[in-house]
Image 1: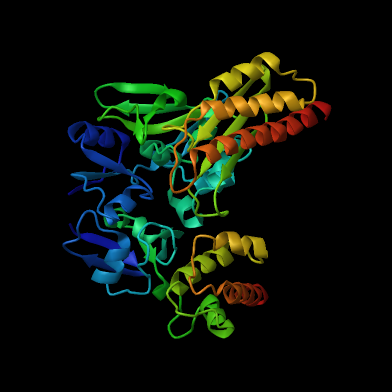
Image 2: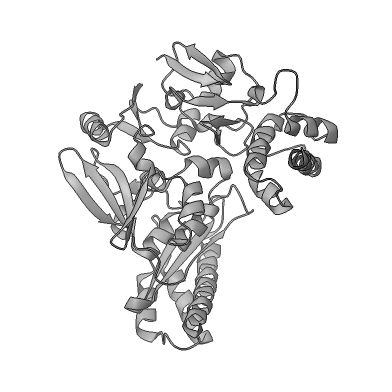
Length: 156
Length: 286
């Protein structure tokens, strides 16, 4: 089947999509956007988190056809040209990245949190990121990064 | 595999009537897992996400009608006041990403004994609105909906359109045992709903039997023994816990043993009744 949707502001069309395919597979394998990571394929790890019509979801659990005509925003679509999003910047500065596999999902999920809550409490940050697993167990620096990004965004 | 995408409810019913083998997909949080892992290869997927009305709810004549696709995140944010038990259960579902996609309609369609929304639906006395093109609308009480492990009372040509519930008239609580506070499938769970007007207490057990179920003897016991103006006695709480545990018929599996589940059901039953009763007496005093 053919699939057309808007990805990071650009209309994309791909052909020969299998009906049982996930949006994650389409993004990575057909559209050349490997930022969203493929790990668990069952919604447990959050590594494939993307915005679908402005709502963060696990791309591995969205059937490709469900994205027809919808707006998708991936981690590749957060930066403004060469200027990183404040969440991305904060992850770099805080060293919130170890192996990096969970990072794109965490960044999209944290990006959504800070768009909704200006100054999230630690409990709110933990709750928002509860579905994003880091197996390097680097959570403390991830929390630092989200706090830093929140501070900068709030005082900007 | 065919991918069917109706844009109206009538089209969806027609598609399901013509293709009873089509698997309905909403948030995909169960269906896509099975497809990703090759556990299931349906002949067709019936995508319901284009039917806008399924994601809406109404509050009319003292009844809430919640569209099958209303996501858990919306139940938590918008319906927590009217449906505290269901909203508490919704908060324990997966992660924010899962709650943005998962819905009560999907939970019903999957009919897993461990589904988080089932116990509060049972305790509140919810009705499932099912419909088919040729058979019309059927209102199925929640306690008649679950008929086996991951099996429900829907006919092959039927779809779930909505769930009907009365807004809470008394305290409601949900409790769930798991290994952490997120991303947890219930080891077992329990819901309670006080219906002070009817002098009745509703219950719902999750992940403690082949299907979600009520603890009927426990409900009857409370209907007879409860003094709605007095504090609970330890003896009554213990007996209630015992009767709820007796209503379970759990199995040993990777998440927990049958004996543990029975014990945990008794503990959760006592706790949730005590929490609800504290609120109930507080409201009377206020």
